[in-house]
Amino acid sequence: MVDVQKRIQELRKQLNQYNYEYYALNASTVEDYIYDKLMNELVRLEAEHPEYKDDNSPSVRVGGMVISKFEKVVHASPMQSLANTFNEQDLNDFNKRIAQAIGQEDIEYVCELKIDGLAMTLIYENGKLVMGATRGDGVTGENVTHNIRTVKNIPLQLDEPLSIEVRGEVYMPKSSFEKLNHARAAEEQALFANPRNAAAGSIRQLDSKIAASRDLAMFVYGAPIETYQQLTTDGKHSSMLAHLGELHFPTNPVTTVCPNINAVFEFINHWTLHRHELPYEIDGIVIKVNDSRLYEQIGVTAKAPKWAIAYKFPAEEVATTLQDIIFTI
Ligand code: NAD
Image (cartoon, rainbow, N blue to C red; front, side, top):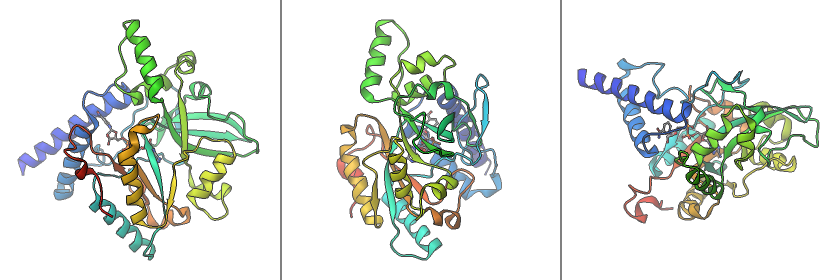
């Protein structure tokens, strides 16, 4: 028992340190798959030993950090993380839980690419962009409006005088990342480890000239529930994305409505094989229940909604054969 408690403490300490490096310094010292393995071990031990439960454990909190050099922004509705899975069984269990919660057999889902960037919320008042903020710890983020204004595919003014909040991911395309690191190498500057680090490092700068020079882009993929109510008549996530597209928000064209979990597996199989053909990095697939009117009924945990899940690609270094990563349908 003492060993278990000691291991839980060690894992919490280690994961808090990795969170700090990843979210505050934008400089990870371990691969994501190692972080995910340690986090899974912590979640398992905490589930097996509820006597060591702690509300401050990294397993129950959204991992981001707020740096004091930016103005703090309290999100009107929390910016949560996503529950993660690496296997087919967990996805089938997720599907069963949803089916039970809403009393339907076949659930309509939306499958999206999980863009490897930085979560951002955009607030518009009367059609004008007034704020761009990071997720931070989910409750409080950082005001980075000055940098968000430099991201060319984010509309600064909408055609309709809407007051809405939309959420998505700011990322750096692979080719821009390579160009940037090439230029930094030539100037003997430290290189960015990956496009995510480069995007986060560019957005969290006080001087907007830096972000402006970095060729960032955004995909919008969600919103607080009030925005669904404003932009759709049927409450569907797919309808909201379609309306956001009409308003000239950058939505991802490969997003697909899947009539049931089998169609979800087909989408995952396709993008597991083809993800390297994309001009930007993804680290998985996000599966969301399409009907937002069910979200309240399905519920949320402290960290993530229960109506969505992220299927994460196994790290390629540890994927032994293609067989391991393809689901059977
Ligand atoms: P996450 O990245 O696993 O999933 C949630 C995030 O996915 C959202 O906040 C959003 O930013 C993003 N996202 C991308 N596309 C999306 C879409 N289409 N719809 C909805 N969300 C989408 O969770 P997290 O809390 O941001 O980060 C945890 C993960 O980060 C860990 O599992 C680990 O892989 C990595 N991490 C690594 C280290 C390290 O030191 N290597 C440290 C901390 C975290």
